[in-house]
Amino acid sequence: MGDKPSTMFAQNPGLVEAASFLEQGVAQRDLIVILARCSIEYEGRGASRLGPGDRLIIIKPDGAILVHRPTGYSPVNWQPESHVINVERLENSIVLRSIRKRPKEVLLVRLERVYFVLRSRGLVDEAEFIEYMDESEIADYISRHPDIVENGLRIVSRERRVGTGYIDILAIDKNNRYVVIEVKRVTANEEAVKQLYSYVEELRKANPEAPVRGILVAPSITRDALTLLNSLGLEYKRIDVVKLHKKAKKEKTIHASKTLLEYIRRGSRD
Image: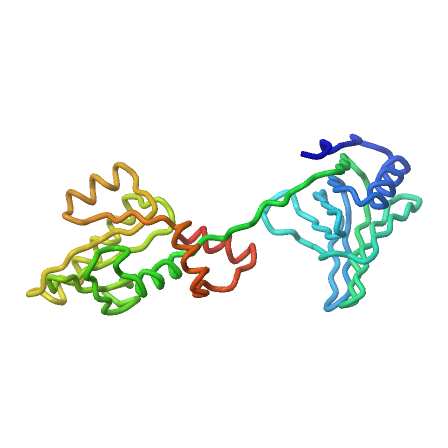
């Protein structure tokens, strides 16, 4: 372990004090966090202007800048790694100017009042980021390796339409029974069980002479969901998403990494 990070902050500084504080932080490539009333202008691949408002501004050691409103998870303005960041003290404001050369972009943040500013140096984060598989990727992998769920399974189709929904995986077991497989990448709850049961019932209606089983595949399941599952005559198969991800990565069959926004939106749907 290296030295501990050092942190300095100023609460309700005047513009002169805040400008000096920011100049030092930018020069030393500190992580800077600012709460301030500001307006924003951008010119580059497009152009935009945002009037005065209270916002959170983050300047990272690599020159990346993010400006957040008090609500919402997405920044209202941002700039990737900047080539130059200038701090200019004017009569009634401080101007932060972030400049990129390629493509040519300029983000200008005009601070009218600074409520709080923090500088931190020596922060270290070297951990590997691992993005595990989404439900579609898990179902695709199971379709290629059905023995993960049960020996002797033969895949009939993926995303089979039944009623108002789609069966993740439809298979036939070694006794020639239909098997409806519903995949979840997170803990399965009672809604997941009900969803599986509805698919099983729809398939039974469409094939009244054929025996149909239902298997819920997930890394874990709640106690209430398991009780409901058993009462409906359905089955549960636990999977290890981490292990599946490693195997799929070796096979080079997982999708390219998604953006943060895509990942958040996807997680909210699962």
